[in-house]
Length: 130
Image (tube, rainbow, N blue to C red; front, side, top):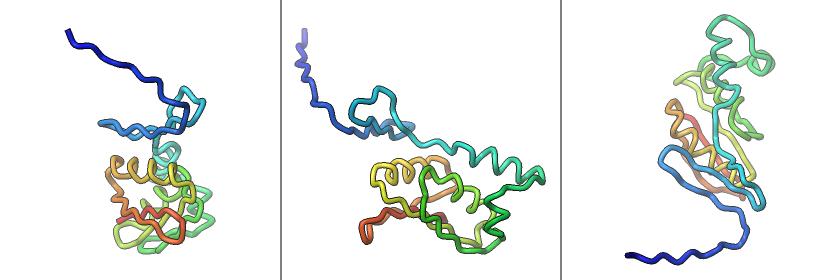
């Protein structure tokens, strides 16, 4: 019979890389934070049905444009922008919180329509669409 030793880890922020997603467990939290395309998918479905999107209208997004999202967050606006600028366009998202940037980067890879190139420069995290 095998014996296992169980060690209690000190409370700290931990990133768990699983088969299907990356999760962030912040110190003191029992629920994980993970990437989900949230409202972006609903917004794209509305655009496909001919409805308007306030962000897209305000930015006057069209095919082939290059967009810089300086507050990437969960990338909802960047995903919508990527849909609208198409393959001829380019969307770059900046996120200053390194854990959030990493989780979104990995989530965008899983999402499939994005290929996130990740690099550190000037203390910021970058996710680029292709």
